Each structure stands twice: as structure tokens, then as C-alpha cells.
Length: 314
Image 1 (cartoon, one colour):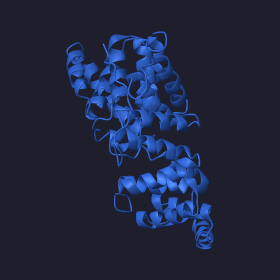
Image 2 (tube, helix red, strand yellow):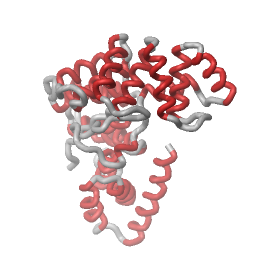
Image 3 (tube, one colour):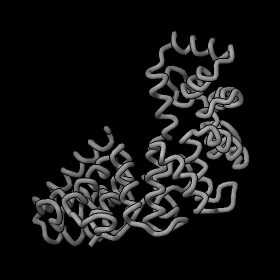
């Protein structure tokens, strides 16, 4: 039977999932913050003409152009990636009062990107952005309290900031708030409330929330137990690269709970989960491997290669 693991989905910080424990290397490869995703939408695929126009506008003191130019340097879109230059433009925009830039500058101080790591400076800018209602800054402030980064660890305060951000639709905050309700950390244990926020986040495509939703359905916590729904959400998450979801999918195919039993598919997903550092996956692989003839083992190995490629291309 699958363990009852529930993930946090904080992004771009030292310590973000599995009850604030240490991340595996695979988990460190999670996408950039929603701030950066937003900025990518703002600037699109930059071209040299647009970059020159942005530089001119930024140099003239336009905070929005400064933010966009900072993001172009951050992601290396049509210019070489330059975190120091990104921080310079984020700072100018932040000092002009742009809340998104304040959040992004705080994030760079928190992670030591382009600037010296400085939790106090990160918190200063997070608070400025959060005070203006920026959902990313509110979320990042919650992360700081959850991890004890620059402040005393306080999960109640983390939950308060996650809630402010989650109510604005910020998917990572919704996922993290759901995790706190599920674990009863900083808030009373409440599976129904956890399920509500997990569903909101998962419906926006958050991979860790999708895995958590699978866990809720699998164990019937906050919702009526439903193995088919569990399999559906675990699979969505697994295809986005979440190792525990990959392990869960493998075990679901091995047991036939919520899906037709398929040892080849089980072997493929468990191979991927094992590669991504899920320790129990190797035990499950050994167990089902003893049940499979050689030709099916080869099919399972080949299927894992196909799945690896599909996941990498997403």
C-alpha cells in the first residue's frame, strides 16, 4: 500500500518539499517562480529591437520596463544571462515601488543570485511587495517563515501569508497551505480544507498539488476514497516529473487499483522513480520483476526510456 506522503511545492528556495526536509537532486529541478513565469508572459520572446526599446524605457525610469529588462537578463532571452544585471534592474524597479520587482529582488537575495545571499534584505523586499498585495511576495514571505530563513521559524505565520497569497490564486501558496492543513502544522489538521486548496492548485497545473490530490483520493482524506481519481492525478503529476507520483503510478499499475493491472507500465514508472531517488521504488521493482518473464522486463525497460523522453520534453 502506498505511504501517505504529502508534498510542499515552494519554489526557488533551499528547502521546499516533503515536510520541509532536504530535496533530492531531481526535486531541485523544479521550474522557476511564478513571478518569472509572469514576466515571461509580459516580455514574450524578446528580440534585439524590443530589448533596445526596453533599455531606453528602463533608463528613462519606467519601472515596468526595468522589471521586464531584469527578467530578460535573468532568463537570458536574446541577451546573455546576467544575474548581476538582472538584480540591478530589479532594484531600480523595486525602489520605484513596483511590487513584482520587490518580490523578485527579495528572491534573489534569498537565494544569493546575482547578489550576496542576505535573508534580512530578502525579507525587507518581500514585506514591501506583500504590503502592496503582491501574491508572490506574500508567498515568499510564507516560505521564509516556514523555513526559518532570516526569521524565527513560525508555521502559523507561514500559513497566514500563504493564505493571503492563495486567496489571490497563487498556485504554489495554495499547495503549501494545503500541505499545512494536511499535516496540522501551523493550522489545525483539516483534511477537507487541505483537499480544497490542493484541488485549486492542481487545477492550475501545479505538479506537487496534483500528487497531493492523488494522495488524498487514494487514502480518502478530505474526500471519498476513489482509486481511479487517485490514479488520474498521480499520473498528471508523474508526467510533470514529480518522483513520488512516479512511484505511486508504478505501484497503482502493479496493484490494479484505479487502473487495469499492467506490470510493464508499472515496471517502467518504478524504474523512473528509482532513478529519481525514491528509495522504495527499487524494492517494488524487485518484487514485480520476479513476476515478469524476460520479454516483459525488456518491454518495461523500453517503455521507461520512452517515458523519460516524454517527461524531459515537457
